[in-house]
Amino acid sequence: MAERLLPAHPSALRGKVALPTSKSLTNRALVAAAVANGGTIVSPLDCDDTRFLASALARAGWRLDWGTEIEIGERSVPADPVELDLGESGTGSRLIVGLLAASPGHSTVDGSTRLRERPMAPLLDTLADLGAEISSNDGALPVEIEGSLLAGGTAEVRPEVSSQYVSSLLMAAPLMSKGLKLAVSGPLPSAPYLDLTLDVLRAFGGDVRVSEDRRLWAVAPGPLERSRYVVEGDWSAAAFFLAGVAVAGGEVAMRPLDPESRQGDRAILEIFVAAGLEAAWDIDRLVVRGPLAAPIVADLRDTPDLFPALVAAAACAQPGSWFSGLDNLKHKESDRLTVMVDNLERLGAKFDRENGNLRIASTVGTEASAPALVTAAGDHRVAMAMAVAALACGPLRLDEPDCVTKSFPGFWKTWHDLMATEDEVRPIP
Image (cartoon, rainbow, N blue to C red; front, side):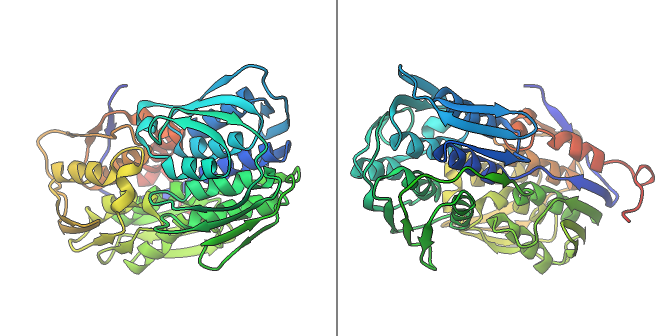
């Protein structure tokens, strides 16, 4: 994979950004439509992760046609065992394991070397308690499943490192003859993602009740309804353009975004506004003005995917930014805490790191004799975050730039267009 030169940008940013739609919601809608044995997904995100999940569903027997929309039809259970490759998709692999455990058929779910390293034991243990026939590689992929119509009933899960285990159980629950009453114990990271699971299930007619603290769930039995689901714009993708304005200053408009979205990563706007970014809404269009005026302070226990964008912006501002709730970053596509700190230290930043907390003691330098080499570590969010850092201390050389296709295939073109000089860009109306 060829390196990419990430440009510096000494002047303020000004432009418009068309954002992709949500990967999290597209993945959940794919599984909900499979549970319903039919449905239409409007404005799906077309990226590596969603394509891997869609291909796995098709190979597992669901009729699937991906054009401008995704049409999912009834399933024909394959007569022979099937092997399903989920690539790098952590969400897709976990969601489909629950679906297949509660559906007839023999399948093996597998993925990349990195995906095989990511834990899945809490989900597998709870499915086994519910009667599923599952074997795994010591709680990780590959996972072999002898699917059946599970009875369901009462179960408990201790997610520890990912709320995706809970989402997988909830999305499979309508297929269980008794439905599912699920208790969630112990740490519950990335909890807002469960709100997305709830919303998608209800959009497909699911009867779901949940306690205020997201610890007790009840999903009624019965098939979901074939529905037409429209995917909203992605706040996770918006984070990098917000970070760009935070570093370089200027004014950037982006759409489509829902100001009332239940995506946890919508918190990025509040975090940046607290540090001095200005923001204004016009229906689904967000206009932000920078740069930052103060250090960033954020607890990312519920929104760990925001860390790369936030720490890149903070390392280019004034010292003193503070991040907490970072313990589970090592379980992502890379060990994001270590990779981001290593990259930014190469650029002159210094950090105080202790017990899942991180303080920026000094920020990046702005002078270098030659472009420094930074690594994406195969992680799409790290790659995009380094484009943000380059605004202040670039140009930088980035390895593995194509890993952004995991969630945002058009990122580099969109970023390049935003880098246009001011006389090439008309003022935002």
